[in-house]
Image (tube, rainbow, N blue to C red; front, side, top):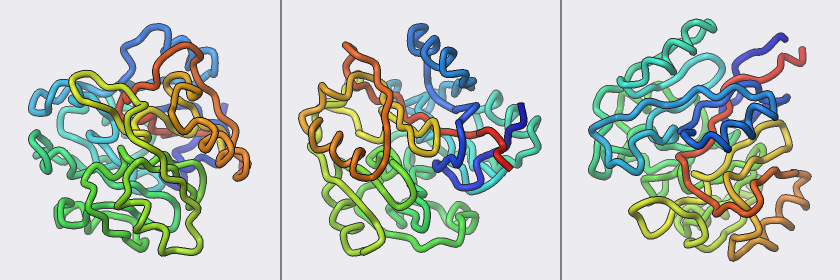
Length: 251
């Protein structure tokens, strides 16, 4: 099977073949096996708070085509990237507490990057794709954004929603916090429980119908031509996002 790194970060054009994620649940791993998607697991960063110490949306970010910003602890991820012809830029100061755990936490949604610009270091800013930056208060920008398709998002953060609402070419839905589980904290983030596994298929780690805004989410996805896969009977759980990395080469 011919495959390639995603050309546009977070936005597959074809079926996803490999993801980076924090998956230690055998049942969840079996779901991806059935979908014929390889899982490359993140490695714990001991300098981060335990519940988020393996969260992919904190430990790496794809900056377009074959280039990745990666936490220094991620040897398995780096090996995978480099063995497939990619380039890794190592970031060695990711640690708790906030905001030092947010150095890579920006959301590339297509034409725009959503981030708290003051948190990202100059080194990282210089490596970002040359896209318009939407500056927001929320440091956990990637965690707070469910990327549905090009310039189309669901967010549970009001500052992000208000910021993107100023752009006519961005479609967005604001949902309530509290329906996504994460250990230790009061709630997880909507972006942390999902990720695209095909051009128009969004995967949710848990049962989407358990979300308090399920009908709004379902209608928003339907209106934008997006299907979803979820896991019935399981709480929506923030595992640090599902990051699509490689896809079938459709060319």
